[in-house]
Length: 479
Ligand code: G6P
Image 1 (tube, rainbow, N blue to C red):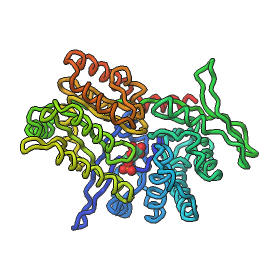
Image 2 (image 1 turned 90 degrees about the horizontal axis):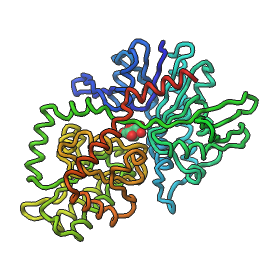
Image 3 (image 1 turned 120 degrees about the vertical axis):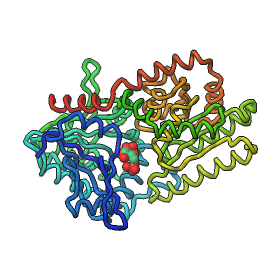
Image 4 (image 1 turned 30 degrees about the vertical axis):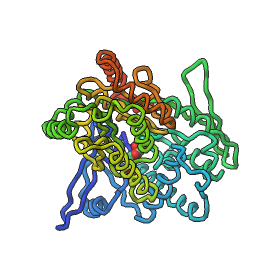
């Protein structure tokens, strides 16, 4: 039994099954891992899904780590919930990614996948209900598990439950595309929580705008109080008592010391030496993303092409290091996007490259040491998502950069709320503006660049993961 429980789709460990039947354990990083490390491991439990065959085998063999419970959910139910709903519907709604003339289509297939999503959430709710001590704090993560708070509240009314959304939250017009009963089920799921957290006040505010229900199951309305910091939603399920769900922003930052230490390991030094040789002392524009539709990698490349067209003085003096490692390749739109990124980079290289200068270097490997080396080398960081919950790359690069780096940051990134004063802001759709920002960034005098980087690094480390986690835990316990 545990007094602090975390639930997320992707857990802190994963297992790979070797040809000889051996299980290789891999540990993940990220804000949650270091956040939860602030709590004694004897009292805490992390509930996550088995993602692949290695994980499922580890569950069958009972080979899991202490403090982690992996749920071996039926693979078809899991695929429908993860690919079919979480990544193809909820992700697209929250990031405003639909190609509206064609999508979304909410048909019988969608209804079947939605049932799987409900079942997958229920598996989490049941595991949490079984493992939680009396009045334990349960911190549920992300859009994969939006129904868990409501399901868990019904099973265990004694628990303190929070939900944190790591993505943006959809605008009301976007969320209203969902069939009404599904939209209401989603909201009732979230409103099962005592506390809802978002990376920015902007996304928190979108949730409050969306949380208006007057239906068969009850009523809910968003509340903003000008005279008090309480913002949230008042609601009443039919036949139940009136309840409140508080809505707050916790802008996750980075742990500066830990990140700098990671960035100075010998393997990163080696990668840095290699990158220096590849870029030949030229200036660098660095970006690091999953190949993710919302990251806007294509318009970033178009902007770089426009920079080289309009400002030929940069020919042979700059290299764009674009790390775009594969993600969600089960989805056709992601496979097509990954291909389009490589094709466009090839076109730019064919158009401007010479025998001694390759203008764009794309790396499609998920290679964190190489990314850290690129961070150290960066003269300019390009972070231009169309819509993004936070974007930690925007915070990591200024912390690690060696001689100061100019951040070109779009208004779509959650990080823009905190970093806008010292970044060069761009509209993510405006390729010409982005090209000009790249030019300005490459031309910025060293002192201005250093001063801005210092202030960016200070803002980026304001709420490191442990504090971010403990603040939420304290707020949840205090009620
Ligand atoms: C986003 C989500 C995370 C997710 C990550 C990677 O940051 O907020 O919950 O884990 O993307 O996506 P994946 O589908 O590979 O877990």
